[in-house]
Amino acid sequence: MQTSPEAIVVLGASVLPDGSPSAALRRRVGVAVRCYNNKGPLPLIMSGGAVSHAIPESHVMRDLALAAGVPAEFILVEDRSRSTWENAHEVRLIAKERGWSHLLLVSDRFHLPRAKDMFRRHGLTVSGAPVDRAPGDSRIAWAIAHGREVLSWVKHAYLSLVLPPPDKDF
Image 1 (cartoon, rainbow, N blue to C red):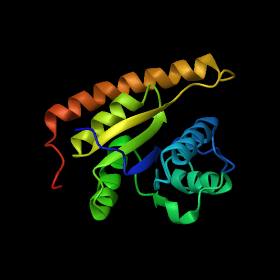
Image 2: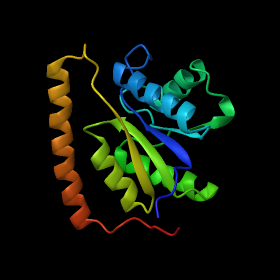
Image 3: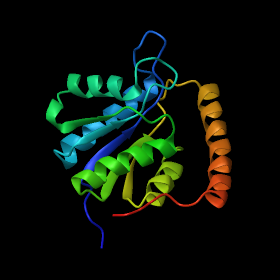
């Protein structure tokens, strides 16, 4: 039985050195806001800590969503995670606290399959809202991002074999 998502999770992306959102981060929040407007109002969980910048990705995403008209009471901020696995862990805690089990994940199309697998391993039902590459994006940057994702899949597969599954006490 397929249920409807109870919240939208936006996975973080780079924050630029000046603290502004990268194009990828803007696109992810843009897709999330469209989902909020079309499926909602559903709570938005902005997930991402301070990875490559002192400002957490989730704080920058919250500000973008607020500027796009999403009311503050529909935005939750998870700012501890520094990887997709940690996103899944931290968001699972939020979902468990609120009694949610089905989430809509927003991330780049090439990242979404691995992210969905990680969230499922944490006991959540997930569907995805893929974010596509913008026509003006550098093909080199896109190829590098795909290469990083391939390496991340290898790491994920290895860790899935050697680490115990996360606690899934839903």
